[in-house]
Image (tube, helix red, strand yellow):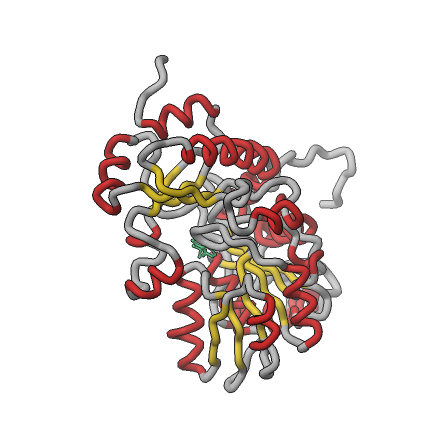
Amino acid sequence: MSHDPRSPRPLVPPLQPAAVYVFPDLDAVDAVYHREIPGYIYARDGHPNAAELAATLTQREAAHWGIVTASGMAAISAAILGIVSTGDRILASDRLYGKTTRLLRNELSRLGVVTEFVDICDRDVVREALKKPTRILFTETISNPLCRIADLPALAELTQQSHTELIVDNTFATPELCRPLALGATLVVESLTKLIAGHSDVTLGYVGGVQSANPERIISGVSTWGLASNPFDCWLASRGLETLTLRVQAATTNAGIVADWLAEQPNVARVFYPGRIDHPDHGISSRLLPQGPGNMLAFELVGGRAAVNRWMRACPNIPFAPSLGHTRTTCSHPASTSHRFDPPAEKQRQGISDGLVRLSVGCEPIAELLANLAGTHLEP
Ligand SMILES: Cc1ncc(COP(=O)(O)O)c(C=O)c1O
């Protein structure tokens, strides 16, 4: 049936869960493989809901190409596996999400890829470390949980001099606040599970890159290593993405107010939020993230683990849910979740004490949020 341009089309993209597509003959499948006609063959290689989501994200990230993956960790794996070979060296921030550190330290090392961890905020240390041949420099835009900010333009300048690929995990910032590729990164990775999908009902990731970043290797790797996404999650993430701008703006405004409020509380020893003047990266944050440093912050309660337990029990409307980026505020405890398997000395080095609470600030009305944090309830 020929397409009539007057026919109505659905306003939102349809969910297409097919795992495989049907061809009339061999010539038709050849035409799809050779890209003479558009189409899909097998969902692990690509499907309409992933393509739709990837296209939107690629535009938002100012990338030349991009692909959606099964999770944020799948995106990180795809990006790294698409670049390294046995014998290569990676330089990585010493303040990464715990599972990323494990991937680099425990898994890639088995394949003969060595990672050295450095303080990414010390430019001289990075410059010195890049004197040895280095395939990848890996960092997060905003680190987890103390919100240290990587000076991406400075790091990009150093990696360009040493022919190193700069991969940036932009999960805490999202393309709303920072677009690492526009600042000189070669690849950006995102956990869509967090703010981008935004409703804690999706597990997905994204890799996007500049033209020179070897897209074929990474894109075919997503299928070959089995890192591909599923249609329903992509459909939900596309829907979440529609409100990303509004959610990030509202949550960032709330986070600034919450950070200042927490700093006034007698049982709070310290607040870590780059929007505050007392954060070590306040200056770079204002320069790199002019729309604000996002919705993530951490604070240290006087009294350690026992105080955290008391506070959590007193604040049931701030769910202890070890993830981030939900529409409403949630909290986590890095020492017993994201950094649980780090040895005590490593936690101490990173400043992850037993009293440290991480907040993923949401978009609820601020009065309600402050009341929830204080452990009281608003009148109906
Ligand atoms: C900064 C960061 N990157 C990557 C990931 C991994 O994402 P996913 O859980 O979607 O695999 C996480 C998960 O918490 C994260 O916080």
